[in-house]
Amino acid sequence: MGYQDKYNGFEEAKKLLINQGLDGLGNALKVLLDEVMLIEREQHLNAKPYERSQERRGYANGFKPKTVATRVGAMELNIPQVRDSDFYPSCLEKGLRSERALRVAMAEMYIQGVSTRKVSAIVEEMCGFEVTSAQVSRAAAQLDGEFEQWRNRPLGRYKYVYCDARYESVREGGCVVSSAVLIAIGVAGDGRREILGVWVSRSEAEIHWREFFKSLVSRGLHGVELFISDDHYGMKAARKAVFSGTKWQRCQFHLQQNAQSYVPKQDMKKEVASKIRSIFNAPDRLEAERILRNTVEYYNKSAPQLSTWMENNIGEGLTVFDFPEEHQKKLRTSNICERLNKEIKRRTRVASIFPNDESCLRLVTGILMEKSEEWVSGKVYMKIE
Figure: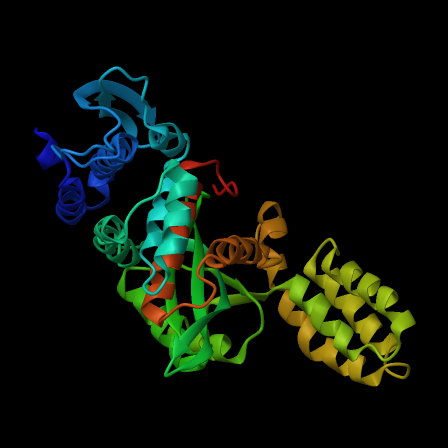
């Protein structure tokens, strides 16, 4: 393969992902790395291929094959050489240290509206050199097929499903508005967790959650025994409509936070939190319900609003007792979603304000795809017989 053919590597990577799907990810990554190394050599020489220039700092000297080990398997790369120089692509060292960093950086390139300066800074941090806007556009265009395929991949049976949403700032009609990013995480029969889907909508209204849940079902999601989430009217109504009869565990962490709004005095807050923990930490559901009844009665006169709220709400956090004891610790809360949201926030700060919902979805998809693959290939989240 000649130099010019190699420089068309991004198009080749796109074809691999479209034709082979995720099975072609290893080959696509190889092509992308080969392309980035060529760009770095061009930066090092300060001249384009075959360009005559007084600013040229050396000459290309072919390629040297090298086999490297990655999470997607052994990879045969073509390392660009430079005559009379110890040039070695820094992007290879940094890129192969974590393919995840490469994928996420490429995803961040994909955001429409992010300035060339910001995108260049991202790539420079990853690879150690600057790139032009044309190079950014060419590289970014390759991710669309992969992201679309991942968001629409077939699902199957998942025993437990966690749901949550976060908000990102998006421009619309000259104003900055908040868009809801809806996310679902599943735990499969082998005990491994996986991000099932992501959806960007204007709000968490029932219609948006319902469309999201219906999309999961259309992709094959079935066998769900328990949903874990915070209390939100839109999500609750949509869940009942699409997954009628499926049990629901209200996040105990959020219940603790919600309860504090009904505590009439500051010096009562620690006591109330302790009493609620005693309910959640009961050995079984019968004992938890007994402690709940006593606590409701205890606050009936000193904090009547709190007492009424506890009677109507705390019971929604006890569904976990209907499931195996060894699973209960990880089913009590939606903390897995909270941790994931923090990771998304850390990455999306690069964009600050997205130009539209589509660009928000692209970056979040890149982050979630990388995290989901890490989970699936990592250790078991919970043991399920």
